[in-house]
Image 1 (spheres, helix red, strand yellow):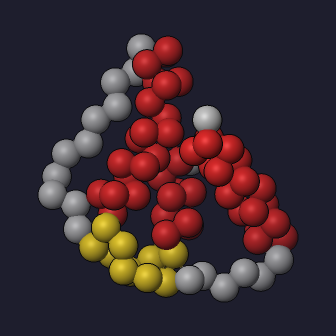
Image 2 (tube, one colour):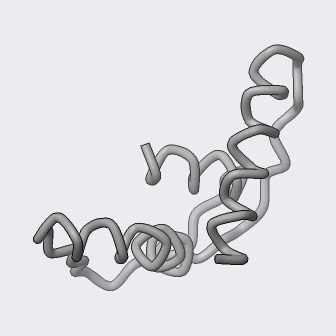
Length: 75
């Protein structure tokens, strides 16, 4: 529940940022770690709908705005 609430807060923040001109905060992040966070958030509804969530590959580090990457993966 806490992660879903945090996700909703970030969505509200994203809408606010979209209306303004928030500068991206670039950092080196593990893409697999961010993807795992998103998959964990979506696991409950996916199971309810009979959708299997899976990932493969080694992952890797990317230089991105972590919250923007998370939003892209969630969408």
